[in-house]
Length: 317
Length: 236
Image (cartoon, rainbow over all chains, first blue to last red; front, top):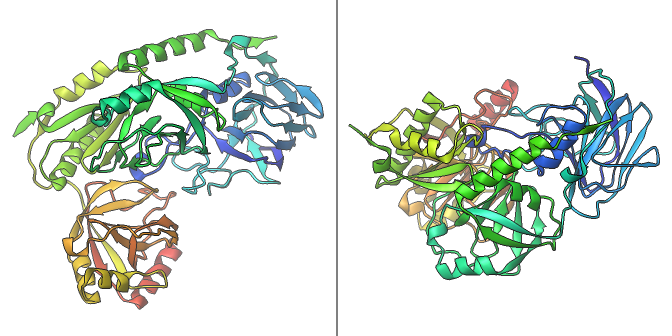
């Protein structure tokens, strides 16, 4: 399989970094799973250029990314897509496009949502750590050179170019999320839920929170109403994806893909994975409410979502 | 003697596709050993739905693939396990870590001596005469929580954490000790430096320690520290 230089970064914008399906099975070493903050959008981008799910691509935070292609390929941008231009022509997100060497891409700031995913046919090739090139700056793993660095001006991205006829494809309208600035987060109670007082649990169900500015790929703090955590002397324990931690200050923190693998704050349970990914697209200031669901309801919702996604096929033309 | 899973562990929901399992043993060491034995059993029989296992202190976080099994199947599998109930030693290996006590500029050894009311030599011998259990690995790749530290060395975390704890720093806090595998912020008290690399992503295995292993610290001189650092640098 040939490996070609395919894209040179002109401007990385606020933060652009390589992400893929994440590091699996390395959490016993203290290594965060990482991977796409919004797997739904990332995998749509991959799908539109016929990449397998989990293929490495560029995760762009907010926007401001620009680059110039150094080889022909097909691309797609999904997620929170700002104004997308190829050679100054405005193009659509959630749709595949053909590019040739010399073509310039510019991705503006998204109005709604937070992260966009730029996939190239054949995927991006980078130094792999524990089976993944997902960028984790804190742990110094992943990224182009395996040192955890996000993309910089002048970075040359390489793709394992697969020569295939370009297929024009786009996501059906129904598949494209709206990224509202107010929504409900469903969670499955667990961990130390039983130790929280019933008063606090009732409050949790009746108040709203705002997404704080203290938010990143590790975790998102919810502010506006404090939840009193139980006074427990806790040993550190494994933290699942979407876990809702409540530190002494009472502001819940939802733990996401770059989270520390273990921690000692009391937890209410974990967000439904679908809603954790929605939260990963929420700008600070978004209003959210927490809704408790049963484990059974969670499994039903996931099955439903999977069935729905299976039905949503790219429209080829 | 065999006993049931339910006799030894509490099972709790952690998320839509994870359970957290708590050991019911009555000492931290026994709890940790029980958790490690459970982890080993699960890895040995490797059910296809098993995604990830995170052992830490007295618990094991188990995540499973929802497309391969539902919560009933996983719970049934776990509660049907017949587990050995001995609280004796398990397969963990003993690892010796060289440490140069009181090394370098970022060092709290004298401060620790003052705060605990002990002579510096006593701090060193209390720290190095013990055999520690690796209770958990987390916070950063390769960061192993070792316990339990001698009661007389117990100090709360520093009021103001350091922005930069150097890689290799040997530190203590509460009833725990650890070696920072790489530079990071940290609030523990630094009492020495270890020349052994604790986390090398490109190696197999990437770290010399596993949860359930035992660790002993061996005091070395500054010269020996530099010698070992050179050796490991050339090896890399």
